[in-house]
Length: 66
Image 1 (tube, rainbow, N blue to C red):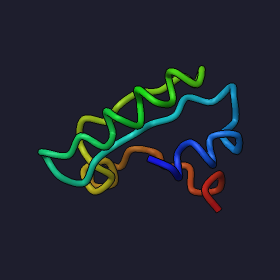
Image 2: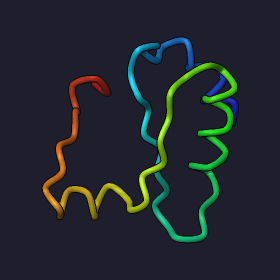
Image 3: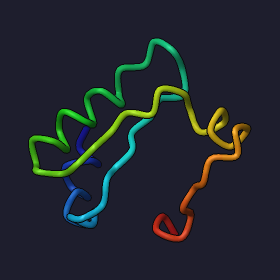
Image 4: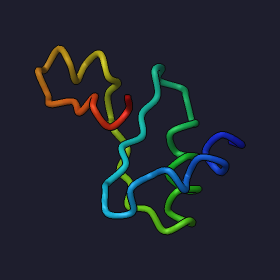
């Protein structure tokens, strides 16, 4: 996960970071959470993906990603 380690300094330290996968068997979100927790970030894994969240009309902050 080189991108996660090289860009982790850009993450706001006071924010909670949400990790998710696009498919059921994916372990990348779990790996990202372990890495980010080790670097001192607060994280949570989204059980469903972004599509399910948007269909459920959950709020999504797109400004921070821009």
